[in-house]
Length: 339
Image (cartoon, rainbow, N blue to C red):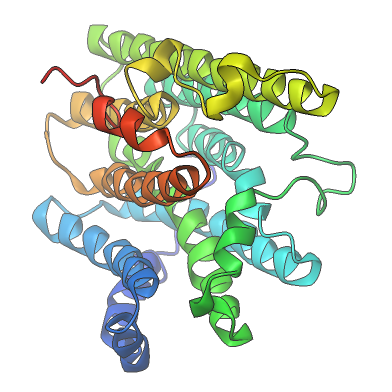
């Protein structure tokens, strides 16, 4: 494999880090989690980030030496990106730095892995579909004002300001730790873990029919996500246009999107996003024949993250719009309700 170091002394460092961290997990943080719902959620997500990869590692055949080298290579890239996100967000007080890289970092990891594996066909195919996903999502984020020539500027996700205003984050040290461990390192680690199926699939046989089927499925989910995001964008754009123009809101008075895909799912974009990465996980299944392997950790953690994120978003929306409770009752979170 091109670019792989022959020195394996540090090849197990990522999992050694997770194991060490699990042993040194601060007691005071655990005690804090006992007293506050928000901190319980944060600690749960951090604990799964540590525990799930370890559990998956011991359940499945451990990574080979070559796979450890790949993990170490992309892990180094992760550390640089996560540290930059933390430093820039701490200095500028704009905490959407990870949001800006969410759709870009997987593309970097994917092509880095394709290069390191001498452009194996399956690796290149996965890198292509991840790039399609990333370019689409970057476009959607950019039209909301997320990217500026001064890269540290740009629109901040409104949910961070709401979260900062909560009583449990009023102490500066608490927000500092939340930004360090959750916003910067947890989220960037998750963005790394979701591409681990590429590492698991590395070095196996060439492309087959199922690889092309999976690639088509990824594109399908990207299209569904594009439609959902476009419907949301069109609704919010017209709603704010009418508000600014002083025109009657009409059907936009209820405040939130509930037409198109949003009439059968409260979060069709979230559902599609998760489906993209679950589908990408199955490239490792096709390559290895193992239905559950250590590279599943990223997809599982992503599902947990979106569960928490959708709960938080719905709490905000329900507080702003009284009609949301009825909509929530009759519409499924991700899938249509048939009962």
